[in-house]
Image (cartoon, rainbow, N blue to C red; front, side, top):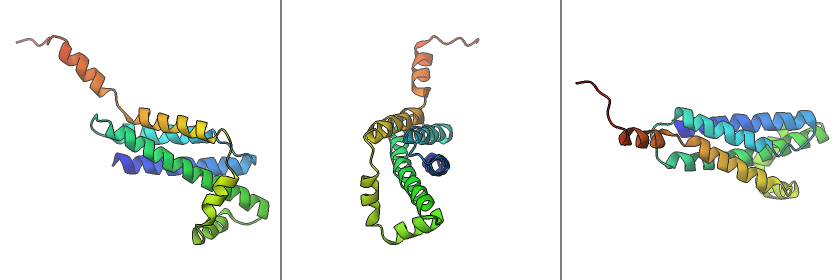
Length: 147
């Protein structure tokens, strides 16, 4: 449940990133951090348990959101330049997936790895809960129950 919710949050974040990129005519690479915050925070809210698996799921979902957001921002930029619908560009890229890696490489910026790294770390850390630390303190404290 948490992974599906995190993936949905990452998709929504990627779509917002693409819309803002289209509205401002800028790449907005820092928006990937927002995607990481959304995905990790959603996994934290919906997840149960305290193991590190949720953190890795948060990191993976954030990385997928990073790639999707970058691709969608490329699509909205191309659509704006060519005067066509972004859905047309997405459909074209979907029908010829060999173009996607070359488009991603052509629009690569030197700060992209930095922003993606921060986002993946944020997705990992936010997906984890503090329950393990709280449980550790509770077990060390003496019980205050009245008999």
